[in-house]
Each structure stands twice: as C-alpha cells, then as structure tokens.
Image 1: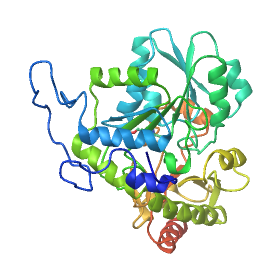
Image 2: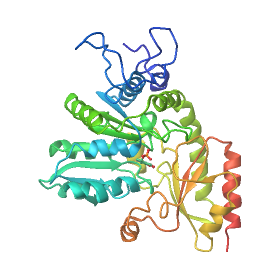
Image 3: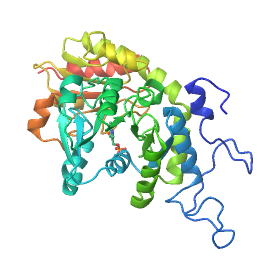
Image 4: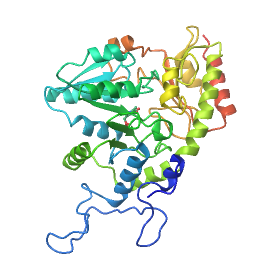
Length: 385
Ligand SMILES: Cc1ncc(COP(=O)(O)O)c(C=O)c1O
C-alpha cells in the first residue's frame, strides 16, 4: 500500500520499485528474451519477454498507478499503442475522432484500419450535443485529444465519457500533451488512456515509446492479448529510460509550464504574431473547461505570424530552438504541422479543421526563459519581409 498521497511522489516511488534480490534502488534492465523454467509446466512467472518482462512490467505498473487505471501496457511507440487500441474493433465498427488529432492517428485509421473495414469520421468533439447526434449503431468509440494536436483545442473529457457511457461505447483519450501530472482522463470517466511516451514521459528526446492504460479488467485482458499477439512491445532498456524519465516528470513540467505561460503571453503581445493558441490563456477556446479538467494549460503553444512576416525565414532565423518533429523534451522544439506532423492529413481537411500553412507549433523546453524569448523575438523580427 502506497504511503504517499501526491502524484509527484508516485513518479519516484510508484509501480514496482527497486530490486528485491539485490536491494538496488532502481529496477534493473532485464535484458533477456526468455526465462528458464523450473520444470515442465512450472515457470517463474516469466516465460518470454514479448509476453512479459520485469522491467517493462515495472513501467506498466507505474503508468497504471499514475493514471489511476486497472492496468498499463508499454509499446514500442505511441503509434504501436494506438494500433493496439484500434485492434479492439472489428470490421463494420466506426470510431469518431477529434477534428485535430496527431497526423499519424488519422493516417493509421485512413490508410491501415480502413483496409479492415474499420471506419472513422472526424468530428468537432468540442460540441458535445452535435457529437452525440453522430452516434449511430456502428459507432463503437470516441477518440479524443485534449488539448488536441496542433491547435490545442480543448474537449470536455468528462462530457465525452458520459456520452460514451450512455451509448455503451468506449471513450479513448490520447493524454500525450498533458501527462497524468496535468490531467487524469480515467478519473474524469474515460475508459482508455493512450500516451506517446516519446514526449514528456521520456522527457529527453532519447526514446520512442507508447503506453496504454485501461479502466477495467475486461479491457486489460483484451489489450494484454493484443499486445502479446501483435508483439509491438517496448524493449527492456527503453522501459528503463521511461521509468527514469518519469521520476523527474513533476519538476520538469513545473518548469516547462512556467516557461510556456510566459512564452504564450510574450507571443500574444508581439506585433509580428497573430492567433496564439494556448489553453492557459484567458479567452482561449475551452479555457474554462481546461481549467476544470487539467492542472494548467500545459506546454504546447501554436501561433501564426502576421502576413508581412515570412514563416520560412522565421524557422531559419531561430538559433537554438530546433526545427524538429516531436515535442516534450527538455529542449525547445518548433515544427510546421502542415508539412511535418500533420502532412498525412489531406490539404482540404487541414484547411477545414484550421491547420493552416502558416501555423507554427512550439514545444517550450526548460532552458532559461529569457533565452527562449530572445530566440523567438530575434527570429520573428528577422522574418519581416
Ligand atoms: C498526441 C500524439 N499522439 C501519438 C503520437 C505518436 O507517438 P509516437 O511518435 O511515439 O509513435 C504523437 C507523436 O507525435 C502525438 O503527438
């Protein structure tokens, strides 16, 4: 039984801790594919590392505890985690997804699961009444991100979960942008939480990983079966890296968010910037809902430059904020969703959902904020036509 009450203590002491055999305070990296059986039909509890590995199991117990779920599962990437969850569905089923989700989530539905006749439709999940109208007999789940990638649109997670329950379908939340430190979807009523562990949980841009947490035994059995059958599991060393990253999640995010709040205000008041998207800014879409369901506005900010500024020049003028896919590392990263993270979404759909060619997405790091603001300011000024 845990003797701590706060999640930032669980980051360090949660899940399965240390090693009983040696007293090591860290979970060892069990770099093994198989385990010797005691005798025929009698094993140690471990049989084969696709099915289960002690380092991965420690991470899986940790994320389940942090999200307040029944069981956790670790995968080789966020997309492998999403693929495992989508494998719950059958031919003829349909999933409603938020109008901005990560481009890869759209792509796997549009280009992979479509072949298995699992359908999807893109909906404005911020409008709960309209969303409920879209639930037909074939709809089996609602998959949302809040705040969503890349426009940081906020959806009422509890509201979606309630609608899903009423219609006996699943509510699935990709909680990558918030992590359990800032938002706990299962506590808000969701059935399944997904993470790209590649982002804040790992936190250092050095490991690709994915996690799933479910809120009941039936789903836990199904995902365990899919995980073992399809095999996209996280390696022992990468599991160790994620456990190590999670230990500092609280302190890292405190600094990330402090920096992001300052950067959002700075961008909002900059003459070269229009349309700052950050759920922590009063007046932002979903500001009140986000305040209710999350600890703060998180770290991600998107914005557009005014027309007289050149976006290409802006990216080249940045000195240390790196133009790169991904987010959530200690270093600040910037990306152009239309040609990078969301390029898999056709142009017409991008325009419809507001992912313009001028949109810039920032993942604010934990560098000194004065340096971050100076880099942004210099690049914006130098990009003036
Ligand atoms: C919100 C979100 N979900 C899922 C993914 C996919 O994760 P991964 O890149 O670890 O496969 C990403 C990747 O950027 C993401 O931003």
